[in-house]
Image 1 (tube, rainbow, N blue to C red):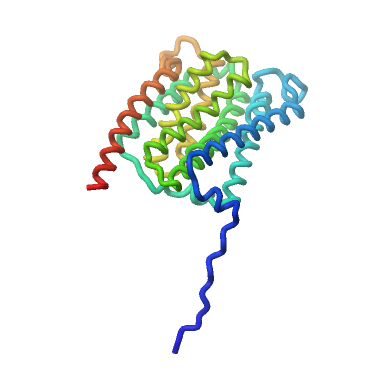
Image 2: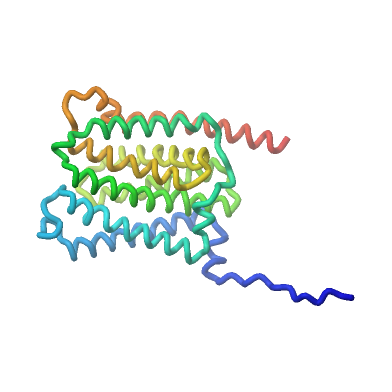
Length: 282
């Protein structure tokens, strides 16, 4: 007697999903460019509705100014990225266990970032900053970490792996895209070229450490949280440093520490990955 149970054909993917499923570095760059444009438009819209110095936002640098001027655009941008992930059915894939795991030496970068963040947090003049501003920055930092890590260590890494690129290329491209996003600060802020160049170098190596955190922990949530603890603490320390605190030395040298640590870890990573590739071939 033959089996007449009907087979269920897999549901055909839409052209939208097929396009992004092919992956590739240029799709990561394309998504980053589109996201950056959307984020800038969202910032313009928020500033139009809640103008700087207005009655709602209050004075520059206040808790509400930080939330509306910095936090709200990136919260909306993060929502756009999550919606994009949902449209592809990638939410579980992006936030689930990673297919490639790391090595114990990758803890070095994570420890350096955590030491800097803790030192910055403990070196903030809390009376000068105020509880409201600290809370506003910490809340905003969660969405900074979510949006920027979801884009670069989530989508860009996934695109690269789907196209079959090796992990050295994955690390370099995802870090370069992250750094390129910050290059736009030259045009959107009043900081000079040298400051922007320093920031781009810093963010490249910070991005590399976040990639290593992704490899080591195996889940995107951990680089998101590590990133989320970085921007608020470093920014608040820069604006409200406490005097005479010896811990502030680490926070003051954060740019150099991250750059040097990232450079050393990049060299170790390249050597390690090449050895791993040779072992896989043998």
